[in-house]
Image (tube, rainbow, N blue to C red; front, side, top):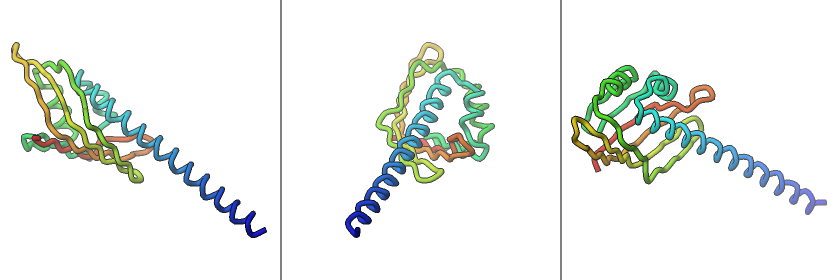
Length: 145
């Protein structure tokens, strides 16, 4: 009897661990999808996507030290005259804890302005917060490598 009880407890704890692992994997995937949607929005400067992906409370930091709120970020992005030729986020890590996620990656961008090609390689730290059912960018800080 005692052995059966221990086996049952072990089985239940194992199932709980599997459920937690599956939930964690789902949240990691959801954050990764939000980051990828942000990358795509940055390439084409999609105001509607920015509205959906960026929290009203965002603090958006550039590698040059400029800090923007949501409206300033969207306005500056849409006003940028350079044409994004490519953008990749490499060396990405995602750590989800509850309703918050920390994402680190390397921003590798190639843009063109007035016939001149510019390459940008910077480090980025992003904090995403789950608002309702959606992950939204809450904070971002870029830094020179």
